[in-house]
Length: 264
Image (tube, rainbow, N blue to C red; front, top):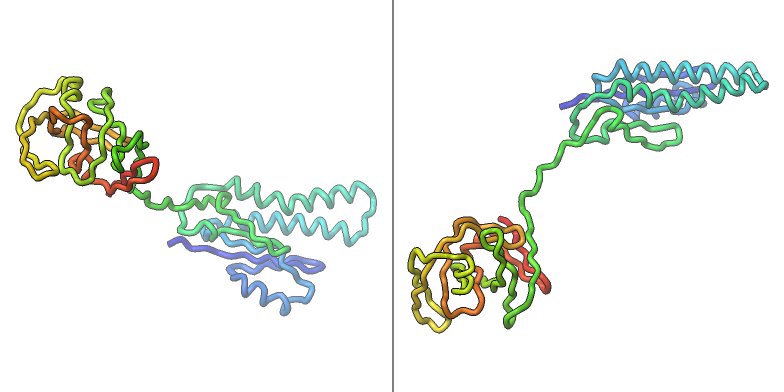
C-alpha cells in the first residue's frame, strides 16, 4: 500500500506558512487561528517518497512569492520592477510543473486521483502524470463477440458465409437444433473431401439415415474457428448446415442482419 503525504501552503500579507502532513480539513481549520488574512495558495497531495522533490517546489514557490511581495512593499512603479514581479508570479505557476517533470518516475497506485493539487481558487488539478502515478490496468474481459452478416434466409433460418480450409467459402444454414455439421456433395467435391466414416442421423420426419463423413482442416465464420472438424456429407442436400459441433462453445444470438457468437 502506497503512503501519501500532504503539504498546505498558507499566505498572509508578509509571509507563507507551511503545514506538513496536514489533511485538507486541518489546513482549512488552521486559517482562522493563524490569521484572518491567510489564504490557501496550494494544497498538495503526493506520494510520501517524493518529499524532497515536493520541498523543492515549496521552496521555489516561497522564494518567488517573497520577491513578488518585496516589489509590492517597496512600491516600485517603474517598468523594470514590474517585469520582475510579472516573471516571478509566472514562476509560481510554472516551477512546480518543471520540478515534478524533472523527478518523475513510474509508480503504480490504486487511485490516480491520490496525487492532486488544490489551488487558491478551489480548483482541483490532477497530477497523476507528473507524480508518475499510473492506473492499474483492469483485467480484460475475455468474452469476445463475433458477428457474421446474414446473407439471406430460408424461411426464418439465417444463411451465412462459412469458409473451409481457409480458401473455400460456401453458404450454410445456422441450425441451432442440429448436433453436427452437414455439407453437400458439391461442397465435398470442391474440397476434394474423401469419406472416412459413416454417421447415422435422424431427419425431421424421424427417419434414420446414414451419411458418409469426412474431416476438414478448418471451418471459420466471422472469427469463430473449428479445426479438424468431422462433417457429414448429404448427397441430396442443397445447402449445408452449421451445427453444434462448430459453435458449441458459443452462445448464439440471431439478429435482424447478423448472427452474434458470444464466447463462453
